[in-house]
Image 1 (cartoon, one colour):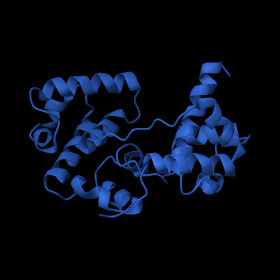
Image 2 (cartoon, helix red, strand yellow):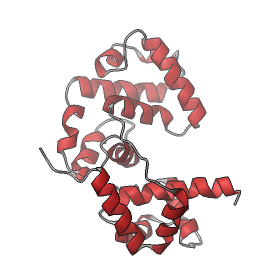
Image 3 (cartoon, one colour):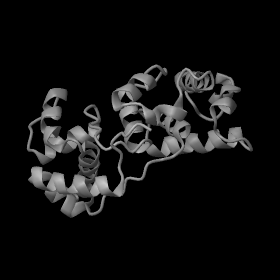
Image 4 (tube, one colour):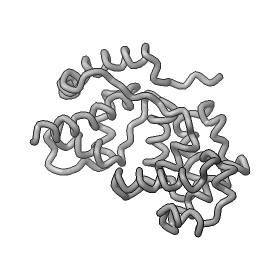
Length: 214
């Protein structure tokens, strides 16, 4: 079994200690936001279909499409084999755009044919997981990073392309503009090897700001 750095309670405790010590800006966010509550999703195929559906649309629109898709497939469950048996036209009836219907069927086809082996991705390094997932149409580095964090529970993922994380970095560290990749990586360097925990608190900092009306 490959021993990749995952978010066990011990790792989270060490991570919080490390982040409090190395980054006083983040220490204030951790104090304000409270406990770290990210719980990885076990259903890997479900997580990827959800990511594809959610791209570039609002959460409520995505939730509506996911509900319709579930109803379309019922009584069967969402698996690669089941999804691969549908046509783009049938997926359109659940509100899936033609482009995303193509992406979903590409995902289902590649998983069914074992070109992408979701059952063993936990054995791969973070970089290898990204390499494996970007073979699927419609899945880029950002989606692969989300999968590493929210499905595999990897502890040291920094999603440098995520808009929320970039906005948080700008606001927390007093930047004039959203940081470019190199700048973001530089700010995140002290967080290693706990960048997932730090990134999660970046998202929380935005929630706190919204709640305070700032």
